[in-house]
Structures are given as C-alpha cells and as structure tokens.
Image 1: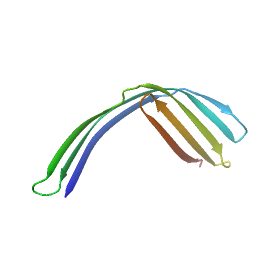
Image 2: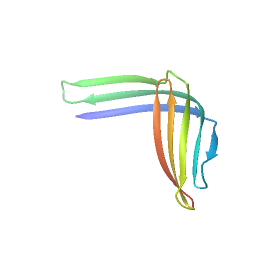
Image 3: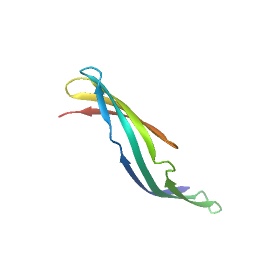
Length: 102
C-alpha cells in the first residue's frame, strides 16, 4: 500500500504582551492573541487494486481571538526554558522550548 499526503498551511499570529519578572531568573508573560489559520490537505491512499481513497480537507480556524500566557526560567547565563499556552474559542496549544545563547 501507498499513502501520499500533500498539504499547505498558512498561520498568522499577532500576540502583543507584557512581561512580569518574578525574580531575577523567572518571569511570566502573556496578552491577547489574534490568529488566522488557513490551509488545504489532500490524502491519497492505495491498499490494493480494489481499495483506493482520495480525501480533501480545508483547514481553517473558526475563532480568531484569544489569549496566551507563558513562563520563562533562565537556567544559567546561556540557557533558558520557556513554556507557553495559547487559547482561542475553538483551539488551544502548548509549547516548550529551550534556548541557548552563543
């Protein structure tokens, strides 16, 4: 069997915010969020000579407004850890990153 997936995804986020330093190494941040998501996905699958499927989907968000909040911890002078949560009326996401300075 073979499966092919073709997709295009466009995301625009505008998220102004403020930061509050809890201590020298820790801070929280957040603010309002505008998010626009649009895309298309197409899946073609073949399992045998008798089974074939083709699925097309539009990708878009129904709610454009929400908010976000994050936490930053400076591990040392070169490494920091960020955890961030975003939410709109119909979607939410959480992210984690580690940043290193050179």
